[in-house]
Structures are given as structure tokens and as C-alpha cells.
Image (cartoon, rainbow, N blue to C red; front, side, top):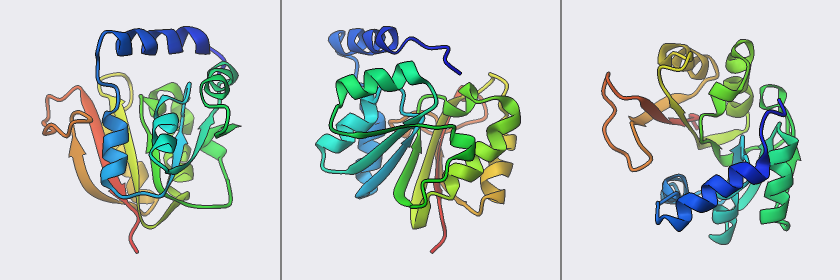
Length: 183
């Protein structure tokens, strides 16, 4: 897509951290699941992947945007970063957790969203989790997302409205969904 400036994006993240904002809800959720391997799908500048690696988790970050990955390399030079389209991704391996944080489905072309969910789901180990968070009311209906993960063979474990696990209600403007691949 190439529509981002990785350094500019990272500067906004750095400014939020400097303001004292807590940006580690995704990390806390993944850590609570006891994962030893994570695919950070749509990793952007690597904020989440870098924190997970600091906690000893094997993590691979994938993004389609070269500028974001250039910044991820700069921020986390020892980690594995891959430039790829998540809708067609095939790493020939699975992970304890596949994480799609930060509105990843909304940045994908509408026609590829079903393939995005299916492709990411194929990378989840039996008994493993896929976590997807995105803003609602921006052209991707929760019912379309639900149909995609059901078709991909995943099961709903929980849905919240924030990374702090606040309750999801019909009026929520964000959906955070924890899915499981059956054993």
C-alpha cells in the first residue's frame, strides 16, 4: 500500500509514550495467554513485536508497508521482519498467537479481508489464539469479520471493547476478539 511514513508514525507513538500513555495493552493480553511464539501480523513499526521479544517471546513481524518495516528494522534490528501481503501469507509454520492489532483489517482492501482472516488463521497452532482488534463503523462490519473467522475454523473465546478487556456492547466503537483454533 505504501501510504505511510514509518518515521512519522513512530514519532506519534513516541510522543504518546512521552505523554505517559500506556501503549502495552496488546502485550499484556498476549503475555496472559502464555504464548512462546507470536506472529505480529500488520506489525507496523514493530512496537508490539519489540516488547514481546523483550519478554522472551519468539516473534516475527509482517507488514506490507516498506516504510513501516524500515522503521521496525531501525527500532528492533535483531528481530525478524518480513514484507508480505497478509491476505496471501504462507510462512509454512504456525504460532501460539497470531496478533492483528491496530486496525489491520481496515488497512486491507475490502475485497481481501476474508482472505486476510483465513490466511492469518492458518498460522495458528491447534489450541492457539488469534487476536484481532479494529475500530467499528469504518466500513468493516463485525458480522463480516465473524463470518470469516468461522469459515476459517476458529472459535470465539471472548470479545471486548478495549485492550484492557472492557465489556463489548452493541454501542462499542472498537471490537477486540480473541479466537481459538480447536485442538
